[in-house]
Image 1: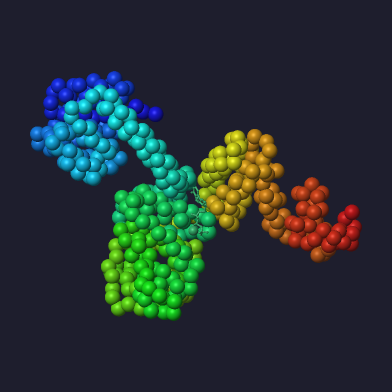
Image 2: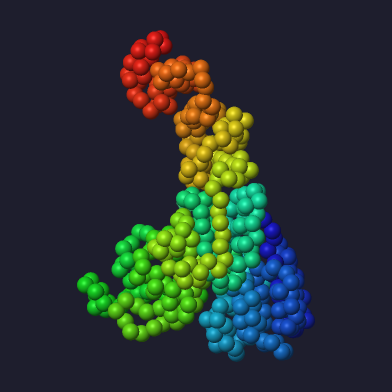
Length: 451
Ligand SMILES: Nc1ncnc2c1ncn2[C@@H]1O[C@H](COP(=O)(O)OP(=O)(O)OP(=O)(O)O)[C@@H](O)[C@H]1O
Ligand SMILES: [Mg+2]
């Protein structure tokens, strides 16, 4: 960990040098200046942990410096030094965010104790900031893994739109990372400290969803016992993530359109309109364009949502990402489960690359999590994969028609032999692949004299 840095602000030269000496001897890196202006300059260029400042200074005084420092970085701690007659002002400074004050004249021991106590507080603060950053990291950009062309385009788009207020529509099958991208846009934007509120539009019926989003007034419907603020208002200044937007009904589509067009919402049962400033990110796994053509989704709303569109391709269409994603999840779950599996065998990588991934990245994540738990060796082997990945898909449907095969019986016979070959003669596996139970397979094999 880096050493702590303390800045001393004192215009009395003797006092200034004395403080510098004591603090340096205590083991901290200390610097000193003789005015508030110089102090501010320093604070902006160096990362200080604590500022110890005299209250009375020419120009910017101690309290003004305190305000400016806290505005620049609220986590920098501040101590005021003051003469006896100005204790009231020192107390006022504490209300404004100073951690403590020291009365002049003071002895060395007193100063040391105050500094020690405050640096302990700083240590705690720093470890919290570190934890917080780790937590935020869960949604940072760097945590969206991908090296494929398609993902590069996604990253570029996130970068371009994150700080704007533009509506973004994220499209992709289930498990392709739509929510991850929505979070990345918000948490990397200049509004990251404002609320990010996700709403699943498919989870509620139309009336409930309207009241959830726009709020309602007391008596708007049975059960509306008091006024309730909607999510549009709660997310003011931040982001509202409308997940499964393709699932909202016709009535709400119209209300949405109005909200998006004029930034105005109307709580259920109210005549009053309210202005809100919310960035909308919407997501869907439906083909909205096709829905517009069929008439089940409003064209005007579609165009409103579709200002910037981010398409997340299916995992099978970005084969290059499969290996790197698998390693990413292996690292995560291996650490989480106190395992020390570091590698994925070549054979498993080949199986992963050949699989169809109907559940996309989520399915890959689940499979690697499960494999990390089941694996007993030091690398992921096929034994810890689910059978869907290890049993080859349907065997002969791609084979061209052959004139040699005269009858359906013969065809069945050939097919069963092939399946049995791929399962190494294992009849249970073969029956699964053929979609019949084991005894049926047994009977057919008997009839075809396959035993
Ligand atoms: N590119 C990626 N890098 C790392 N993790 C990913 C990536 N894409 C998806 N994931 C992970 O896969 C899981 C599913 O992602 P997410 O919930 O964002 O998908 P979704 O598209 O919203 O799915 P659904 O339509 O089912 O809601 C999450 O655990 C997410 O962290
Ligand atoms: Mg989702």
